[in-house]
Image (cartoon, rainbow, N blue to C red; front, side, top):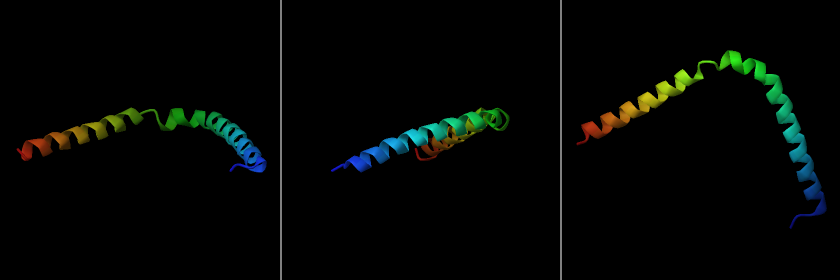
Amino acid sequence: MFTTGRIIFTIGFIITFAVAMFFAYSKDSKHRKYYYKNVWKVGLTILLVIITFTILTFWLHD
């Protein structure tokens, strides 16, 4: 099913992809602190909206 060429290509692709992701992550780490410092507020707001809609749905359908 898997030929030797496919296995070599897959291993090479995985290694290259992992190295590229490491360099992209380390390069982007400086920007993340600036752009995503208040992301927890957005997540909390979305969670509160979902909880509110769920409570209203159950309350109005009883």
